Length: 69
Image (cartoon, rainbow, N blue to C red; front, side, top):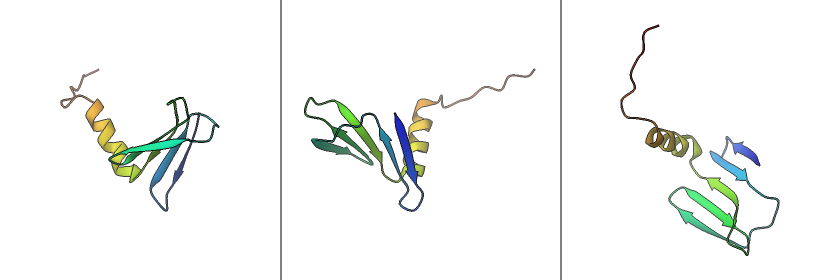
C-alpha cells in the first residue's frame, strides 16, 4: 500500500493495488476506484485536511478522560 498527499490540491491518494481501475464511485469527498472484480484498488480523499480530521473525530470518543499519573 502506498499513499501520497498533494498539498496544492489538498488531495490524498491511497493506492491499494497497482492494477488499473475499471470504474469509480464517489461518496462525499471520497472516491473509491475498483477493478473489474469490484475490489477497491485506490481511494482518493478530496479536501483531505478537513475530511480526514472529520473521520478521526467520528472514530474518537466524544469525551476523553484525563488520567493523572
